[in-house]
Amino acid sequence: MSLQIANPKVVAKIAKLAKAKGMTKTALVEKAVDALAAEDAPKRRRGRIEALLQQLDRVPDRPDAFDPLQWDENGLPR
Image (cartoon, rainbow, N blue to C red; front, side, top):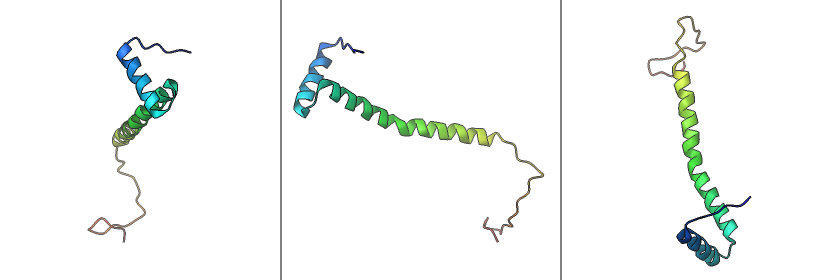
């Protein structure tokens, strides 16, 4: 599968950087795409965690819930 880049300035930048790095243009583009994807991974993970916490916040407290531990006035188990 091929990729066409219509902007000649971008093509020139890729060629120049690939030559300076001693890489093929394909390897350079792959490395850049991987780096950008890695930057977004923590944001996606954070979004999934926040969505899960929002779901948990919607679970109502049960008045008949049983807590086997006793707690002191500082919120620590006795």
